[in-house]
Image 1 (spheres, one colour):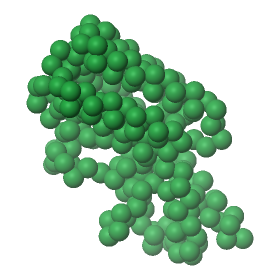
Image 2 (image 1 turned 90 degrees about the vertical axis):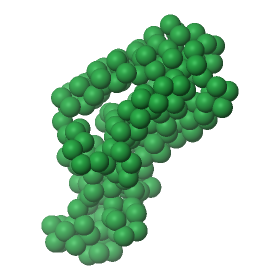
Image 3 (image 1 turned 120 degrees about the vertical axis):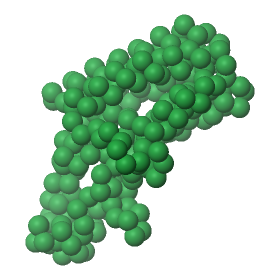
Image 4 (image 1 turned 180 degrees about the vertical axis):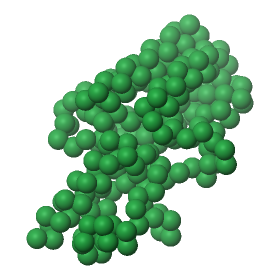
Length: 232
């Protein structure tokens, strides 16, 4: 019986995360709240959270609680007055903004990068490639790749901008979160890896136009995938 209760609670929380009711970085209801709302034991709640942690949908920090996908940043993005990304419209506006900022950052990275900065871009790409099947890790390494490109631009305003946006700037379509669609999700993930690789290769080659085009294409594809996922 407890197994069914655990599965039911995990399924409910998973749906809330995937549908965006609980946003990336947002704190989940407390154990006591879940116990009260679902009429289950603390053991069931903890088992459900453990299951979601194993899927990469939830991370738990001692003394702080459990968070969807990734805990909120302690950096500039957590500053009072930061604009939240709370709706599909917000997410699409953010992607449009990123296209303008990150396309130029990629071009500058191709021109200005140091060897150390290029290694950081490559390392972030490798971390992202290795994160298949674990959405929370994928989100972190996806962000680190984009931040490494911004740092490689040589202009601190680009890297400061991305640091201020934080990890929740990364759009996570349902296909990268849902269980039961592994083949489709893997195809999606492999496509994103290839888009990142095109950006990295163009930066390494010092090709400003190609780097800008690869970044713009990647973010345009991200917008398309996000819109398609929201309609699913």
